[in-house]
Every structure is written in structure tokens, then in C-alpha cells.
Length: 211
Image 1 (cartoon, helix red, strand yellow):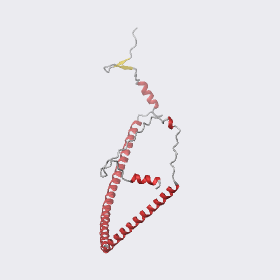
Image 2: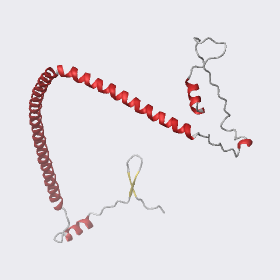
Image 3: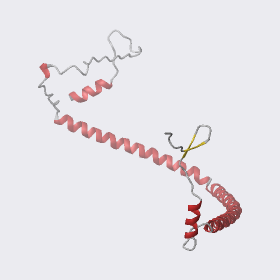
Image 4: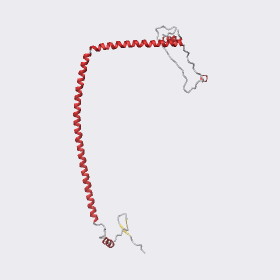
């Protein structure tokens, strides 16, 4: 027998320790000791290059042929079971074809009726919503127009008041017609603003120095 094939069969075969009954459970304990990551490689293995395991050409050819045969047989068995399952399923479904079609038609009619009712309900809700939105928009436009009219009216009233005040103040303006009269009035009634105000609010006029 080929060595690789013999090793495979031995690995898959039952393992029995001498002196232990065959019915005893197999207990496997794998222990692997590895050095930490920070420990460098051993000097004796610094330039070590693992040699490839030699492969027997005859054994390789035999294993490849056996594996291909295994895949072919497994695929054939699987397809056979699948065909039997599908045939049995078609046979079971064939008896209930008419009943299933009737149930599907009834379900389709029921769903179409439900869809029609839902469309009608959503249409009515859409109409109510559009009417409500239109009323709200009309109300908002009316409020906006009223606010704009009030704003314009307030601006007009403020401008009228400003014009009235300017007209009243213009009566005291100095023009070319009354400039001489304004000069004579100012000279006849002199004003002296050279004074101070104490803490009590009394006006203290300027007094000449004595002596």
C-alpha cells in the first residue's frame, strides 16, 4: 500500500491504547508549547529552509483518480435523491393543483378588493387633506395681505406725522427773507452759556476776580 494512503487510513482508523478496553472513551489532549513573540528565532534555524515533502508520482495519480471517482459517485447519488424528491413533490402537488389554483384565485380577488377599498380611502383622505391645505393657504394669504396693508398704513401715518412736524419746524427756519430779523433778535437777546452746575443743581455764573 502507498505510504500516504496508509497514513490517511491510519489517521481515520480507531485509535486504541494497549491495555485499554475497546469500549473505553477516547480522550485526546493536545499540548503545544510555543515561545513568546518577542523571542527571536533560534540561531541554529536562522538559515533553515524546509524541504518539500517528496510525493510519489504513482501514489499522486492514484489518489487523484480515486478522489475524482468519489466526487462523481457522490454527485450521482445526490442527483438521484434530488430527482426522487422532486418527483414525489410533484406527485403530491399534482393532486392539490385544482384546489391550490382555486385558493390562489380567491386570495387574488380578496387582495384586489382590499386594494380597491384602500385606494378609495386614500383618495378620500387626499381630498380632505387638499381642501384643508387650500383653506389654510387661503387664510395665511389673507392674514399676510392684511398685515401688509396695516404695515403700509403705519408707514403712511408715520410719514404724514414726520411731514407735519417738519412743516411746523420750518416756520422757525432762518431764510433769506428773515435773516436780518434773526440777527437783530440774537443781538438784542444775548445768551451766555458759560456757567457751571454744582452738585445741588444750582447754576453758577462766571464772576470776575476781585482786586
